[in-house]
Length: 358
Image (tube, rainbow, N blue to C red; front, side, top):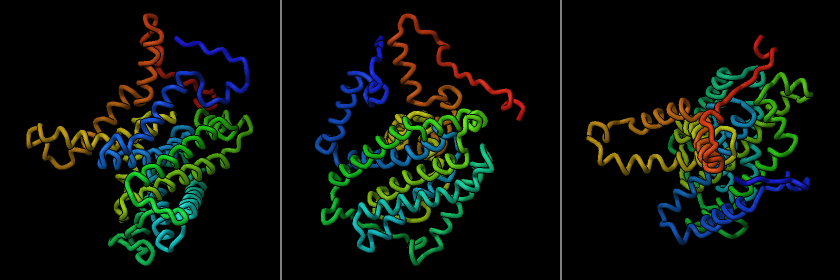
């Protein structure tokens, strides 16, 4: 078992807490850089989708996992970023400028959603964001002069001031660079006073307010940052699939994003990446095994949805901390063996008296 003795304040703000972190993250970085030469074209495209969904997952994780705000309409922010990117790049705007505008417009839409949502929370907030998602999907379908309506809109390759990322390898490296920047930004945000305010609101709004935290400001800020990250993911998504239609940003996409962060591990940055791997990898696993199943099961319509629902129920019932939470338990078991206790990770929530009276 590793014991870390802190003797300097810089150790608290260091991203890598010990040599093990440096080694494993360096190994992961080498694999990601070498992926175009290791993986085939199809697997590299799946890796690109994992990076894109990880960015969107980071946004939803910041909102739901660290601020405690429930959202079932996050695909709307993804769609705003995607369509903004498609329109601006079609007008000849450079990729960096277009993606910055896409993120800014998504953040503005997030503020518009966040302001009315200040009066509600829990399931009522989920219903409000779900309604917003339906409205945005209908706007995408009806605003044909901009979005192309149900006929769809094609998207070109990213143009970075003359350099085009028109191959799978080049676009993969572009997505990788943006994912690293977004991840570092979220990690540093969570270590700042703003991130601590988000966590305080998640744990107890009454306690956070009593400490002087402005609930309205930080909830709205969380919605804005979350929507901006979803907009960045949507912009990259538009370039990856090269064609947009309104039905790509429906309620199913929102549920997929929520499923991703819950199964990955709600409240952990790593959970966004593990959830994205699960979201992209599960359909491939289903396709690989359904040929070996009886025709009544393997060819049944809705098989994917049934498996998704069963997996989500299983995680909620037996592993509410998600995939990353399961890894934490395995790591603790290996470090503490033979002194590991089965109930040491049992979740216990303590309520303030004022919370119980509400």
